[in-house]
Image (tube, rainbow, N blue to C red; front, side, top):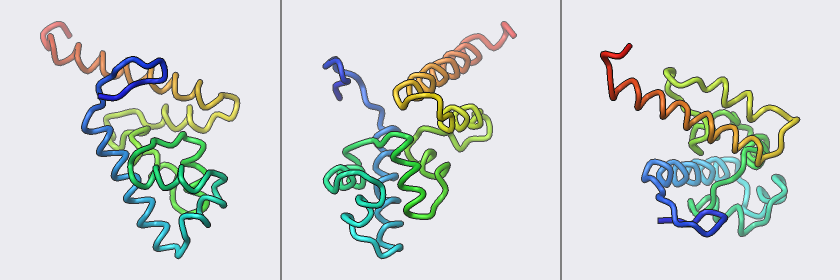
Length: 138
């Protein structure tokens, strides 16, 4: 169980925790491959050294903006980081282009982007649940 910003207890799915962990492992692997120290990468990205360390250890989930900066500094695809962070789904059955469009929109704040992505994900989940609950109603 985890707590959200309002202090309410929420369930954290194993898939989400797993994707954050794999993101951290991937980032560390890329950083070491680029021969950058944690401090050097943190400076390039514009985040604190402890914050980047927490991302690598899977304790924090970075925003889309931080992921973009990490991708730029590590010279990797931002989309790849979004997939590993669980923001964009690699499955072709999922409409990742919608998620990428939201993330790329410079007219939205990070909070607005996350809200849109949450609503979009809930619609997809609802439609998936409805399609499997009553297949004869189609």
